[in-house]
Structures are given as structure tokens and as C-alpha cells.
Image 1 (cartoon, rainbow, N blue to C red):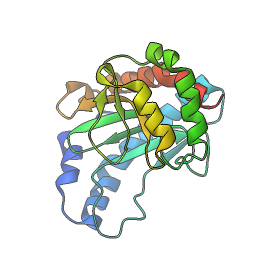
Image 2: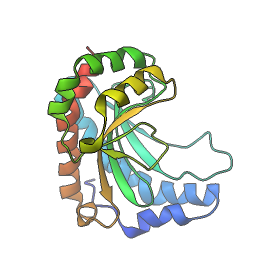
Image 3: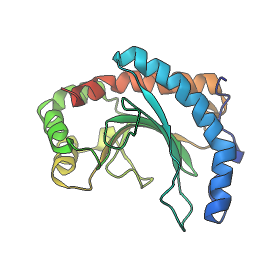
Image 4: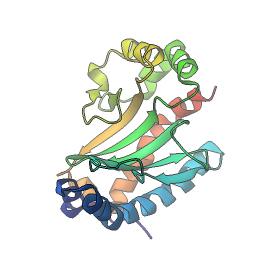
Length: 205
């Protein structure tokens, strides 16, 4: 099925109290939409990269008490998991949707990738638009506009601090009309992925 957009009902999921209650709403309201987005994104990325890509939808299985503050899908070149690989994410907090190219702390080659990015920092500056955002921790909502970012310092921190991550992409506010237009949103996702693909490929050098 084609993705038909996010609604206020989807974002209201994060106001539901209780782990089981919120998870039930995530499964019913959001995960079917993630499947539609993810299937399309898998096809797109498989074509763009020439590698078989796989969809992973966050299950929040380790949670025993606190309900998740966000939820997401990931697409990676590994069937078994995504956290140990560079991957693309689409997901929601209660006030925005994020589209990320994500390098999170579980990456086995994190230091080597960071060193590659540092040596190719001018390529990153050319590739990343000023209105994109960067986060060093996927669990937090906050991000820094690329135009305000000390890129060198962020990459050095990503290299040197074990728990530091590096995510780059777009945030789209909850009330943006783009989110309710499934076709336009998917175009934005694909454009974002295509824009960031040179960095994804750089990580595998």
C-alpha cells in the first residue's frame, strides 16, 4: 500500500500513559504506516546503493516500564539488524518527524568512520544543506541546524566519545502540512536519502 500521511492521531500516541497502552497504539496507528514507508524506501535504497536493503521496525522490546518517547523504522544493508550498521531512519517524537542518516554508538567501526569523515570534511560540507540538522544522541529530541554546527568538533566527539552518535537529516514539525500528504512526504524522504547517500557510501570506504 502507498503511504497516505501522518495525522494528529498518530502524534497523540505519545500522550498515552502506560507502556502497554502506548505500545498498542504504536502497533495499531504507526507501525502499518512505517511498513508502507519502509517498503518503498527499501526499493529506493536497493536501487540507489546496488546492495540489498532491509526494513527494521523498532519493537521497543527491552522496555519494561517507561513507554517510548519516540518510535521509528530503519533501513540497513543487513537482514538481522541495523544498529551496528550505517542506516536510514524515519520516525516520530510527539512534536516532529525525523528523517536521519544514522551512525549510532553500537557501530563496531565508529572510530574509523569518524576518521574518514574528518579527512573528508569538505565533502560533508558540500553535501549537507544548511537547513538540515545534526544530532549526537538519537534518544534526545534536540538537534543543531547544520548552519550553526561546529562540524569538526562534532566529528571529533563522535570519534572520541564512546556513547556519542552522529545523525544528520531533517526534522519536520508536527503541524507541517507536508506530513499529511503521503506522496509529498515520500518525495521528501527520497530526496533526503539521495542527498545524504554520498556520506553513507563514504562510511563504507
